[in-house]
Length: 111
Image (cartoon, rainbow, N blue to C red; front, top):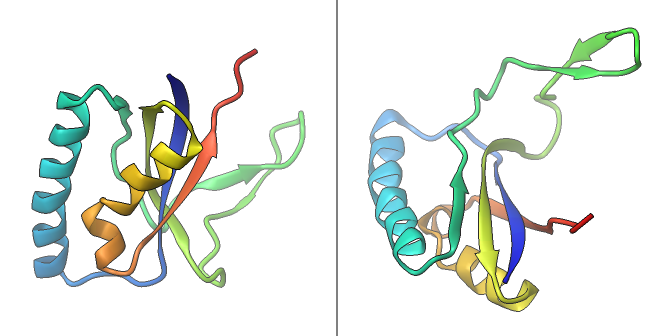
């Protein structure tokens, strides 16, 4: 098995009702991933507006995330899958995708 990071991206802020419905569906999806041995780590949702980007070894921080980008990373998880194709299939089954979110699938390098 290999590990993959799923970066959850969204272009708009959902209504409170939509967010509650999505989270309920996502919890079911995460439980299914865990039951089948695919969930290595469930990363908590990320704040959409706070944060910063470290630019150098001095600790210079610039604003971020950037509202002018097309989408914002709203969360992440670490997934176990046999290969990239299986990781993509697992991501496609996420209920967030049906609601318009994107999931970036990135392989974790073994060092």
